[in-house]
Image 1: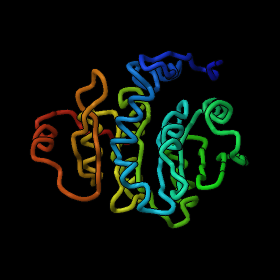
Image 2 (image 1 turned 90 degrees about the vertical axis):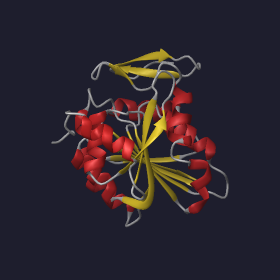
Image 3 (image 1 turned 180 degrees about the vertical axis):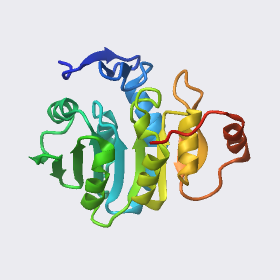
Image 4 (image 1 turned 30 degrees about the vertical axis):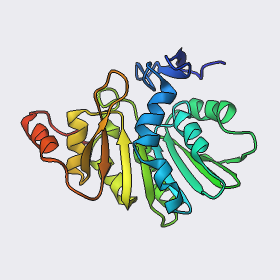
Length: 243
C-alpha cells in the first residue's frame, strides 16, 4: 500500500494505519490505534449506534477526511433499514483520491466536479468536498438542501497545527447547519478549543480520551455545561481561537 503524496504511512498499535502529514508535521490519528480511536471518539462518542435509526437520512459531517477511517468505520455500522448521508471536508485532493482508491467500496457509483466527489450506493450517499473547509461551508449548506447535520466528527489536525478550524467563527458555522440534537465530538480537550466551542454557543461535556489522552470533548446544543468545565475555562488565561 502506497502513501498519498505528502504523507508517510505509519502502522499503529491496533494494526491499522495512519498517515504522517509533511505539511502539518502530525499524524492523522493516534499511533496507539487509528481504528480504535475512531471507534471510541467518533462512533461511541456521538452515540451513533443508538441514534442511526432516528432519521432517514442520518446526516454526518466529518471535518478532515484523512485516510477515510471514520467513513469506513461508519459504514460498518450501517444496517439495511438505515439511510446515511455523509459529508467530509478535505483540503488535500491527494487524500481524497487515495480514499476513493483504497477505502470506498467498489460498488459505489462515483461522479466528480471541481469542488466535490459524490458517491452513492443503496442506502448510503456521500460528498467529499474539496478545498479549504472555511471556504466550502456555503457549498456544504447548499448540498444539505435545507436538511441539518446530526453528528459531527471534528477531526481536523490539532489546534496547535491548524488553529483556523478551531475558532469561534468555525464552530458558529457548524452550529448554523446543525440539528438541535446534534452531537459533536473531537479527540481534543484543548482549553483554547473548548473556549472556542463554548463562546460559539456549544454545551461542553468531558468525554473519556483514547490511550494516553485522559480527556476528549463532546459538544451539544442542549443542556448545560458543567460547573467544573466552566471553572477550568475561567481559570485559564488562554484565549479562544479567533480569526
